[in-house]
Amino acid sequence: MLDRKCIFITGAAEGIGRATALHFVEKGWYVGLFDVNVEKLKVLAQEIGEERCCYLQMDVSKTDEVKKTIAHFGVQTGGRMDVLFNNAGIYRVGCFEEMSIEEHRNTISINVMGVLNCIHSAFEMLKQTPASHIISMCSSSAVYGMPEIATYSCSKFAVRAITEALDIEFERHDISVSDIMVGYVQTPLLEKTPVSFSLQRSEVKVTAEQVAETVWEAVHGNKLHWRINLKLMLFIIWLFPFLKRSLMKRSTWNKN
View (spheres, rainbow, N blue to C red):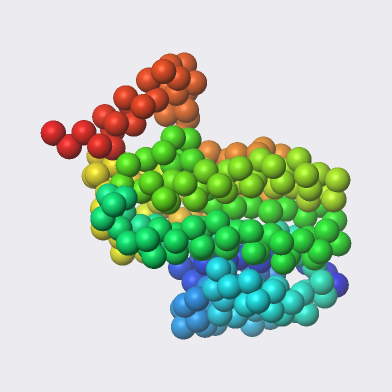
């Protein structure tokens, strides 16, 4: 087994995944880099150094591909996986009826089934690694469903539910489970996506590096949900639960 801790990162080629890989390498960890964009993975792997990482092209929505990739990672680490970081995801903006059913299906396939594929395939490796951890990227849209990103919001509610359920279920296996709940993060994913009205009304203040630091804190902490820049919104919702719908409508949909 590898003599240092290791992390398996999906969606590692850019944005949050890339920042997390660099952060953990700086802390002395071995990192597994996995993404559909193999060219950007190669660049990142060269930057990190081959003795400190491995990489492979992987589509999280394809079960067999995920299994083979995790097996490859296990060969590199001697069967060790201290952290599984479910970061891969897609973000589509648009009115529900104007988006094709294929777009809706693809969002669920990657954002939900991708998480399930990785957790299920990595379970045995996580189980045999003492005090292992599963961390998944969640979202502020898992607090209340958001217009223009309804299916994305649905997918993040699912991630939240998976996290809460498996945190209890996997406790007997010494596997901790948590998620990172954040609003808009300045990443290439956001830059490539048409801007929703909710984004027009908000400021993107969170960087990929800030999220990477939170992932590090989550690995060494014991909270279930790690929230970034959501304290005010959650406090208002907790204090005035009957205002949730009107607040969301005003902040994300009232274009007049």
